[in-house]
Amino acid sequence: MHANHELIKLWANHEKRHDFFHRYQKWGVWFTVEQLGYTYFKHDLPDGKTIIAMEYQTAVWGEQELKVRCLFYLHEGGLYSPTPSSDWQICDHLKQLKIKLQQEAKGGSTDGA
Picture 1: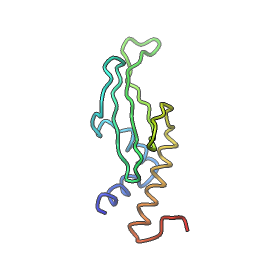
Picture 2 (picture 1 turned 45 degrees about the vertical axis):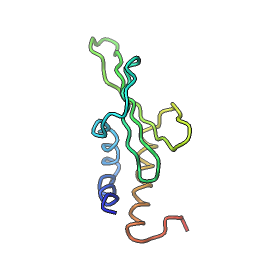
Picture 3 (picture 1 turned 30 degrees about the vertical axis):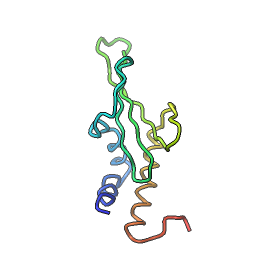
Picture 4 (picture 1 turned 30 degrees about the horizontal axis):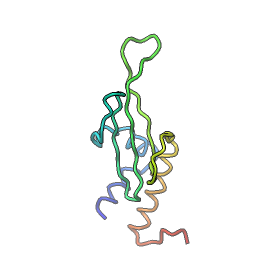
């Protein structure tokens, strides 16, 4: 229950939820694909879903140095889809999960009834 309380605080508002997954490097490297230059990070959520961050480097027109970019995926189990999730989708999912965790902490129903 203590961990859920920390998540509720961590995801208290839109800005905090956004910061949570944009600081993906704190999650630690999950695996790398050296041939493609991809580094993957993941965070397992209490509802069984996973946020996956795929970091890569890309050239930017007019600049000599490569820029680090990241795509995010909200993986819901089953087959992995390479279609990235939007920031809005991930923030909204974290918001709904925070609400569910708050209800559970108060002993309330989470089945929508």
